[in-house]
Length: 115
Length: 112
Figure 1 (cartoon, chains in turn green, brown):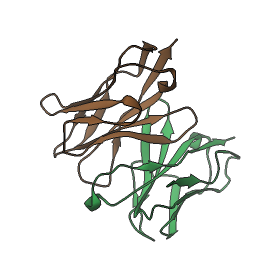
Figure 2 (figure 1 turned 180 degrees about the horizontal axis):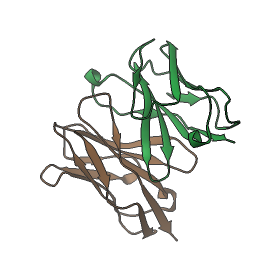
Figure 3 (figure 1 turned 180 degrees about the vertical axis):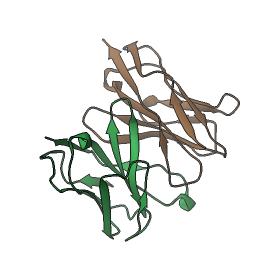
């Protein structure tokens, strides 16, 4: 069964900590994405990557960075966690658009609480 | 520019009755449209997709959606609701770019 795996389901971190959220996919997808999900706001794109070492800012990149050193792994980094980054974080992957719009495959999410 | 509007934030139905979740979209180009479902504390699962083939699309768990270009709609339906259908549903549009635009979600409640 193909999967997108997020390393943690629940995380509690302190304000000012550096936080790493990890995502691994086993589908050989080129594209990988990080979204945050908040009630009433739907999903908002933070960053995406279309190839190893490539990244593009999404709609809300402030306070975040990403790393993609290998095709299967895409990491989201909160440089200095703040309480307004408390949220559900969802990783997704997909084939490139030129291969057809097949949709995303999502991980199960990481619920991050910053205290 | 693309956008998607889910017309109801909450929908309640009785078990065994039909489900209708409404979605309108706006797109400058021929869109691809998707419905995803999210059960509590889970990731999003693809229910069905429209990618310019048949306008009536069948998905998993008995759901289907009809693409109506004249109405710019892509409503999700199911003839008979089951308790396990209680979840949040997201309508998504894309127009040939990497970027998928998500609606704000419709929370479906199924009453026994």
